[in-house]
Image (cartoon, rainbow, N blue to C red):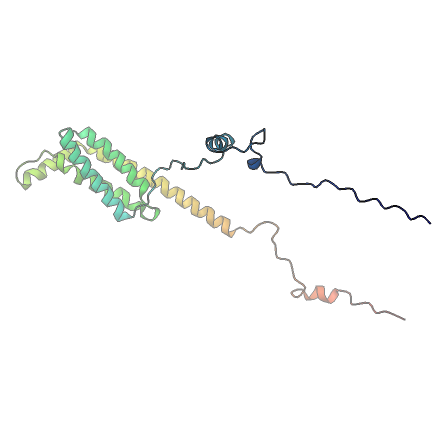
Length: 215
């Protein structure tokens, strides 16, 4: 009898997983390198190595730190005003508004109340170098009081800016805390507790018993 001929199994092509786009490179399949790799990442919207995103300073000062910052900044502004502009009130006032805004923004949330308090003190301390008082202590005090009275508009403006910014930050902080409480007290949908077999004696008693086999 003739035995059936066995044919060798045909070699099937192996399927390989497609390469990622980074390995495939451009349209012609070449992997970019060097400067072309940087241009390739920038064209695809990816992060470019060696470059960091621009971030503005956002420190968080305590109540004491914000007071020291505001007073020191206004003292420096007062001496610079006296040295460069001969004690011009406009230069001092504009920079006082800027320092007041920075103090209100940089103080931490737990010490927001201290910002509107330290701002007028810093204004009075920093205006000493440009006050018109000369001679003894009495004349210097009178010159300081006169300078404060003549530049009260800048004092009120800086205090108002600080109060508004602090109030806005306080309202946002309270709203954020309320949202966190609501999110924590709310149960997710579909997560209701289902009675377990051990906790429901009625269901266990009503369950049918095992069937007995009869011969």
